[in-house]
Image (tube, rainbow, N blue to C red):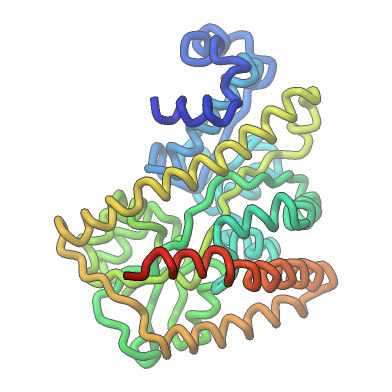
Length: 361
Ligand code: CA
């Protein structure tokens, strides 16, 4: 009911509620377009997998059953890290994943997921929808026959799970830590060994000692993964992922085969899901963190200031080098940096000043 209420409030459900829960079964046979949606997440995993399910349902509802979308968890059709290629070649029409996984395709793609010490969820949405970010992302993915849409955001993530305390950067030396994307490169420069693993494999890797530490996401998602059973210390803040945008990528030929109204439905369903998943995080994270600490005895720790300062310095190196790869990368980094700089100036007297004022006394 909560989900439906959200969409009602968002004003997008009135179109085709009749074709929703009641109609979808009968609409299946009559669908004009049968799409597969492959994901990098375990099937039905909270927020990630269930978010993909909701995206599929919403497209079905809004289109009155003209598009029928079947969701596949990681490993069902293709593995978590094969989503990009599989949608590009048309094995599936749509994928739900995160651009930080596609460094091997294009290093600059990672910027459309997020940057360490970079934009928050709200700033990412500002940049993507109204600051030129999505145009650049679309230009990049066009090279691969894909169209990207923002489709969820994690909020500020947690720093990760460790079995020892991190008191200085010396404690990062030789540490085998799961961390994808630009954050992984920062960890490498800090002396650690970043490992890239899909979310569904983290618990086993950490418990068996294949990795020493891992970041995954937020309290809500981490609790569902059971990571507290494999590590004691839970660090914050997630300097490496301050507001990671999830993506829905669509095969360009499949999208262009849709009439204009169905294209608008796919585009706007993604936009609704982008907001809905962020709202779910905001609603679920506080309770999940309490559960981790109070019921499971997790030890919450903040990264020391000098560790944060060093990681920030290394991030600057990584971002500057990203800008030097080619002309397009330079354009993306310049756009990202300009938006972030202006947003920082504004947020100092808006979000930051307000949050500090709210916390006083
Ligand atoms: Ca993460």
